[in-house]
Image (cartoon, rainbow, N blue to C red):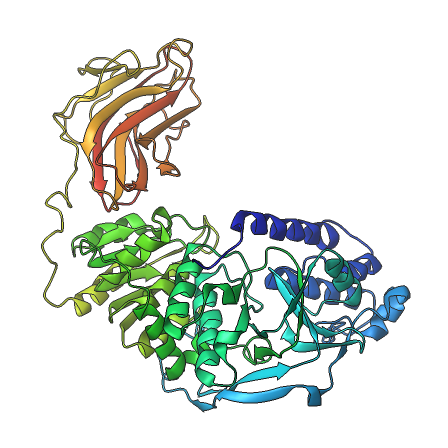
Amino acid sequence: MAVRIPDAAVLQATKRRDWEGAMQSFFAGRLPISDMFAAYIRGVGMFDDFTRHTIRLKLNELAVEAGLIERSGSVIDAAARLKPEYVQIVCPDLTDSFYEVVPPHLVTSQVVLAASVNEHAGLEIPPTINMVAKMARRPPVRIDSASGCELFLHPFCYQMIWREENWFCPAASNRSLSKPALSTMITQAEIRETAHDLVIIQDRFPGGNFAHFLFDWVTRIGLICESGFIDSRRCTFLMGGTPGRFEQMVLEAVAAAFDLSDEQFLFPDRGVLLRGHGRVFWFSDQVENYLHPAQVAHPQSVALLRRIAHHLHPETDFRFKRIYLSRMDAGRRRVTNEPELFDALRAFGFEAVVLSDHPVDRQLALLASAEIIVSPHGMGLAQVSLHPATPALIELHHPSLGTDAYALLATAMGFTYGYVLGEAVGGGYDDFAVPVDAVVAGVERLAPGGPPRPVMAQANRSLVDPARPLTANPQVSAQPVTAENGVPRAPFNAADSIWCHVRADSDATPDSNVGAITHISMDEGRFYTASCWVWIPAAFNGSSIDLHIGEWPNQWQRSADLAVREQWQQISAGKTCPPGVEHCNVVLRVASPEGGRIYSTHWELETNVGCRGRAVGA
């Protein structure tokens, strides 16, 4: 039986509603500070750590403006509660809204990882992203426990409470829920009695993030199983977040590694109030002294990751020995000069991989056979730590954003590690450009034998025969034309064919296809870029001109700039060939009234090139 995980889409919708409530309550306008204090106490915006942190900054800012505190002060205490003296002033009817801290003698502590010297502290990483490796010593990691309590567990928060005594445990509570907020949530929660010991694995950060899930959550499971403090086969591990196939696969490997059952991992799909007759366990690195990644690359934690990787048994795809992991599908930290970087890496036999184009099982298979990986900093590198061997990794960094998490773990795991620092550029959120020559120099150091023979005989040339005609039928109206007055000349080679495309009657032919090259052989799993050059006459009155690779979903496209007239410009589309696809068509589509006319030339379909072009004058 597989580990049961809830519907991630439902949980994401729940989290988004909470975020929207936070925007309305704290950031939509100039609301009274009393309303904001009340919203914080009600728990609005508590499902995301960064959102909660931003809200606390907002409350302090308003408190300074109201004269409640000095600029260096705070209305929030160390346990993330509103301080009662300020609640008394701002909204006195809510003064007694927070639980008191449990007496320390009711909490038992046992050290599971002793304080130790960080042997990787000298790792050379730029100061702006040197967040973990700079620690000269690792603090100890404890397993704490208590009994006689209740535990409220939600997909995005948890809190240990003794309601009759009015206590809670800050170290075992990731959001410091107030009594009113918790009372409302418990009213809607499932009440569950259990004889098992309970182990809190969820923490402040989302389990849907592969890095936090693997390095923080999973290693805690392994540490408690190896500690001998409890019988790990008679406990329930309390998870959370929006898990998917990756989390499911990893936990199945954890179960195999430590002789656990799949039922021991609890992912709530709503609030659950757990009343245990055993003890509740949690880790000091969850809230008190947060460590990332993998308890600062402690040898025991690194060994745990290796052990779990051994039980994953991913298949291997030996076509992918050298991989560039693209973030073209991401919303931030994209490499803006990726096409140029692709061209340079392609000469060394690299394959471009967009991980989100592949199911998780295949993602692990692609990475498992890689010998050299070049990648921007991002969540996809978490999976590299599950590599069965010791590949070489070149990480591309934004100059001031990101962390040294993967640098630290790659070094601890014996990978050959190098990094290239980029330069921030405009045009996108946290996007940056990298010096291609520095990346090439790094690859040359890792591959002194020079570039290998291409994996595919066609890897470095167009897969479209330039002499092959475009299809011409009632739906696809493409005709070759010869140079004459008013007809553009080919931008590169005068011998290139130029095609005239005319939009057919939209009532008779509702699809917008005006040209295509058909039945092209494809290789599943590879990233392809289709491109052609188009000329838009001044009189064209359509709304879009696009290129498509078959009907593959979520293609990354560069559409025609309709403001560029009477000159050539390149349009393109890129996507990974889906499983089972052996042939496809490259199709030009024009949204325009009947008779809309454009020209095209220089059609190509290539592997491992960026999906961006440039405009060229006539």
